[in-house]
Length: 522
Image: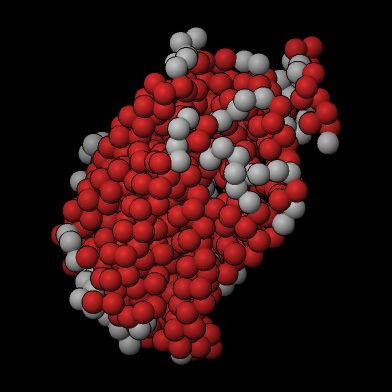
């Protein structure tokens, strides 16, 4: 079980009325947006894809913010603080991931929403492959991945709630999860999209302030580099320290592959294209999202490195864990207004991103899996209510993962990302761009990708929580790569190879519906 008391001891509590006011106002705004979204939600389509009403800037900002979220604001500084430049390979590659995703999928997914009545990723994959097995596996993969990724954001949320409101971390987790659930059940994706837009603007502005204060706090890049180099030169080497000097090279490159190519397999990003008002607004979305992400990543880079440099130089004492680096920095070393702005934006980021995860996960449970089993919910209002009910179950499960796991926020984030990348990069990216893709290839690739992630990521973590350290050690020892090499990259590459191989071997079964042929050939 997570030891909450030592963790919360390292986080300073905001006793400044300015910071409290920012947090309270942001929570109020989030709830009001949720109520507004509820009043605009009449159908499952409104709840899940906003009725195709989103414009260029809102689409780009919500795409960037759902990828950044609590993972980037808490997990990012945590990884950079812990491993130096290794963590930055995630943030170097993610902007490229937006460009790859837009080029390969944006127009195709938006046209798919016009050609057929698709609301979820599983709907789209059923249309492409006309296979209930593909639909069911897609829904299952989404539900499993959502639990890991939602846990990432809830793990970050508990620290932010502690920092702003001074509550114990356990109550920050439970209270934050309850607020999130109420907000998500009220507003659906309509509320999430507009909260995404609001917090994206705030994150970009806040990142500029954090960069300036972090560089000043650390003595400029020259001072930061000198202090880190004197402690451990690998911290500022191009590949960082994760796994040691040699392993760090492979880990950094693997993360680069996972977070650039793997971006196109993230359902919370891919399904955003269903929401765009028309095709024309997709043109500038990729550069807007990529540049916005790059700017916001300065928080991870500057806060993580400057805090580690000051600890190594002896200027400050390490009374906090790596997961607490971001809240500690903004509360203790930035002005109240900046701290309030950043923490409030982070609170909104976690809420809106978690709302996206909850929506796609709940839809998988209420819509995709029942349809794959031949038992669809035909009444739209009933389906909407079942979707909202599924939100509660996913929130409880993800809260349990955070409560019983002591994994770093950043590590939880890479696990969730890896689940989605392995399951959906072959099926979605190749399937929507290659007429030779087959349902058999999609099925085999998805099962293999999920199996590798479950065996080497989920099972050792669960075994460790259950006290079965022998089992966890045995599985980790059987992993054929250095421990620092992310499982998600291995799973994604294996899944891609299997998808291509099995599709080529089953070409006689290759089939593309007539109305999708022109779409795939674009």
